[in-house]
Length: 149
Image (tube, rainbow, N blue to C red; front, side, top):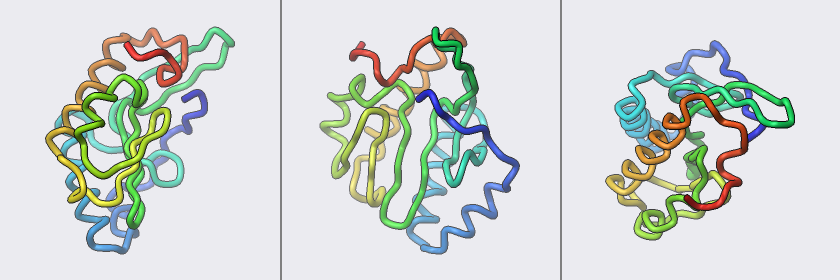
């Protein structure tokens, strides 16, 4: 994604409390625990409502550069977006077994965590995290637009 916003200083706990819907808050807490365990980093609030974990630096051949979150999600009532910065195509086989979801280039959309297999989601997020981190800061293309590896 070549337009990832910078993280801001909003408190994650205040943001979670503002979600209002108890099920969304519970699902958010589950995803925070999983992504923090995978990344070893606490969540940071990015942009309007994305909770991101760990960072990577990109510099494209066009000269554009910046920092992005390695894994993250955007919780909303009845719709959670999980970001796979290496793209959903790389995870097609596992996504086929995930459960009720839809996906686009780098987003997996889930209504509620109870609709999916959390063990499969954790495998997918772990693989995505490992792949982005394996690039060792040498990201010169938009990962999710690249062919399935």
